[in-house]
Image (tube, rainbow, N blue to C red; front, side):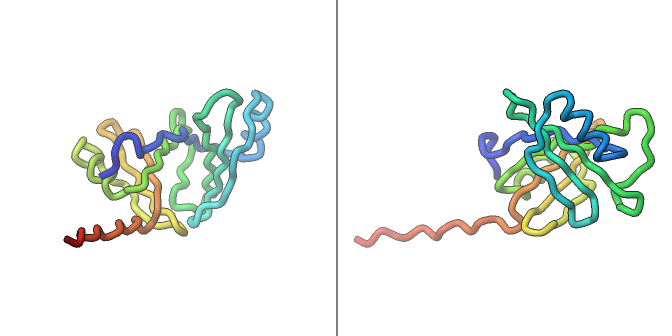
Length: 143
C-alpha cells in the first residue's frame, strides 16, 4: 500500500484544441517547457512549469481518431489531476475504497496508468512502474 509520503501530486492536466497555440499562450505568460512526449494511444502531452512553483501544468492533445478524443463543450477542457505512486495497485485499492470508480487501467511502455473518477466525476490519474519492484527476501539470522 502506498504511503501518503510516497505518492506525489505532480500536475493538473487540461485538454487543448491546438497544442502549438496553447504553448505560445502559456510561454507568453512565463511558463517553461519541462518535458513533452507522445502517448502510446497517439495523444501528445507537454508539461509546463512556472518559475518558483513545483506544480506542473500538463497540456493534453488528443487527435480526432484517439479513444480519449471528445468534442469540446464548455467546461470540458479540464482533463485530470496527475499523481505518481511507486505502488499504483495499492493507490487504486485506496481510491476504490474511498468511493472512486476506475475508468481506465492500462500499461504504456514501462508505466502503468490508472484513471479513477471521484464521486463527482472528476478524473484522477495515477502512474508508476508497470511492474512493481520486488522486495528483497529477508534473510534469516544465523544463530
